Length: 214
Image 1: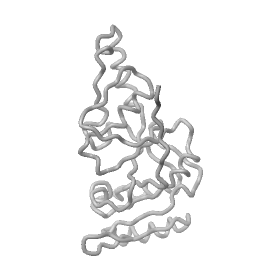
Image 2: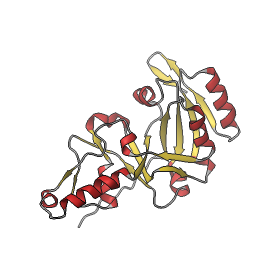
Image 3: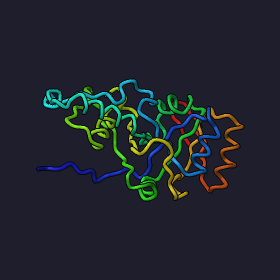
Image 4: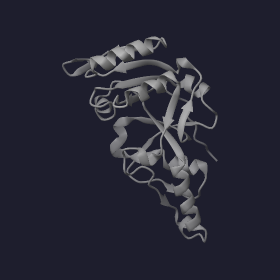
């Protein structure tokens, strides 16, 4: 049987963050962790939807299996990343209309620093929900790796891990932090000071006509 392999991974991935919970966002960098939330906390109401293969639906054990899938989905933690740091809609939607930040992470650094049970996957965008035939950890990850095609602009990658904080030991996992063009002076100064103590570079966004530069 042929197999699917992924030979290419990005050098960096990016997390767009609002600063409405300023200290929480900075402490995540300072304390070296990613927060993995339940899929029900994400902004897409279609997250986690799926259909079952006919053979599974006809199984005498279908109700139990279907309930197990639902429960296992709710126990899976998700941390989302984008492939680029300079996409306008992402700054608008996830970084509080350009008032937030975008954190750059070294992918190789994260993979080396976090626990083995953590999985990094690329999201697949499709017009139909995934179809499952059984309930196991891989089926749950497959379900949560799908999003409707309308979200394709996000170019999303996800880490699957236990719910809550996932710590990484390597301080160099965060390579730099980009500051939105509308960030407040107070937040900008505090970020530069606090991240400067960690030797993490910051880059200020500047808008020039129809382009953004750092």
